[in-house]
Length: 424
View 1 (cartoon, rainbow, N blue to C red):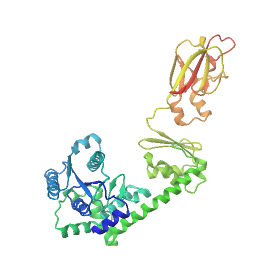
View 2: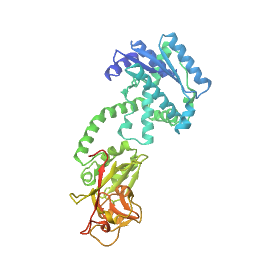
View 3: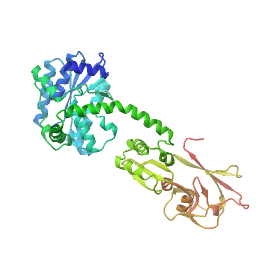
View 4: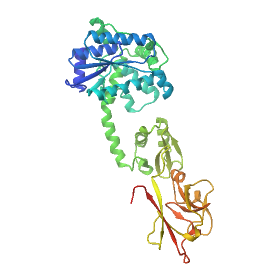
């Protein structure tokens, strides 16, 4: 097994022979085997052990075992204690997720402090098979089917080439003890249900199920660069930015659904939502989808993304008195100063707002005006107005009010200019 792991490390360029390797050691069979194999292969190692204080005496037993093991084998060791249940209460996450967050946060802190090349963890083929099934159950794209990687983000997994059975056999032959986490036999966690129930059932159909699923992950992982290259090339062919997609361009693609999925995957939208967006391309305008952090709007011939709770553009209105009208544009408005009886104030549009558009005599609802100029729902929500008292004198960036216009009798002129903050 040691030779198999050595070749796997070399083939996947997991470690260089120079430099420190941090090894996560729980005291279980997998991490104990990993520690000794890396030591036997001649790598410079340092063990890291986490005590989450979740299993009372058993947690302290594990720490004591790892401490004795490292001392007897002259392996440097760092131990960190965590108040895991307090973290769960503060963060509103599961105990499993809390332990994972705390563990890897500390691992990366030690990595930065020591300058080590990577952190080795003891995931093996069985873990890979469980990960694939877990991702499929939760709903995953192609990347989830790739499972865990031999090396990613400085987390190294040199045991992905061997099974749990091989690991236990290795320790038995070496007459090396290890500890057992009693919670691994509980069925509360989904991963444990997969390990204890699902995989044994699948093994009755395919006795080689662990290798089959692990090999599938490896094949998919090696295919992803080709997939991503094709996706990127097609995304470049359609009019897409970080915040918008052109629907007519999408409709010309046979891969619209996957392009939408790839565009939305990092924004928290589910697979089902991405599929619904793809099915709605020819539907009516105004449909909205929401993830935890983003909103997606179908607006006429565009899909528009907006981050939630993000304030509208960083803009300001500059007010000045001028002698004459010298320049015009949507971001500039002029008013008869003597008609402005109160200071100018600003707010966003709300239901029922109206004004008298420049050049007209009748009232018009702001909402109808914004619809006429094809403003998006997002733009309507953030539309800024300039007011004199209760009167709306300017739909900022668009049209001013006819009642406050400059005319032949105007003696003094107020100019308002919308500018982005920081611009000249």
